[in-house]
Length: 263
Image 1: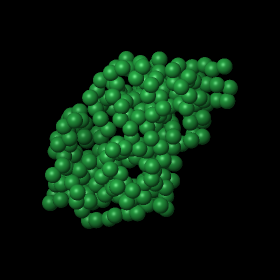
Image 2: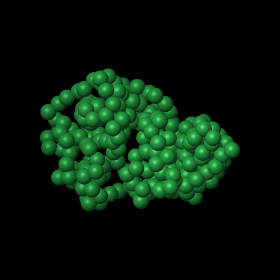
Image 3: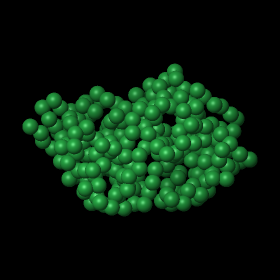
């Protein structure tokens, strides 16, 4: 017998207890349900043995994000009924593609590798060109990301707030921000790395290695592991992460439902 419930104050602690059984797999759901209830809505499916899957919708980011997590197609069929109508990015196991595309025929799929490095396993690349970014670097981030035309534009105030929330490192060349990498989510078990980006004119100089290495080093001072997602056909990026010590642990789908965004 199974039942679907919305996560509320009544069952939240039990759901969080179930998620903590695998803190890496459920890192996003665990963090959002604990720390950003205002922007998080989740439905869970219970069976006799406990939590069998969930679908979580997060609305704080520029684009709505949805996580569909389960090993069972039957569970996914029931949970996907609670997904938004359109204009969102979904993250889900690749095996669930048929279920997703049946509901969203216009959806586009990209496969991402989930990579992880544990404490004591990383190789660090250091340089005096790298430093921690602060709110005073908002203009530098704004100028750099003007070259990333496929992403939604932010205001300078957005970048100030972003830098206040995220832990980020940048590589500076002649006073100009050339590359950066940051951690957008931290738990005692794992830090998630993201936003790795280098100016198109300055690539292939090792700058992304330096930035990613710096944030990975801080991550592993504070948690047992660091992890990131990278598109499975982005071989240059994967080589960078492998140099630092990251290894593939799983794959996920990035499903674009009418946003035009790609990983």
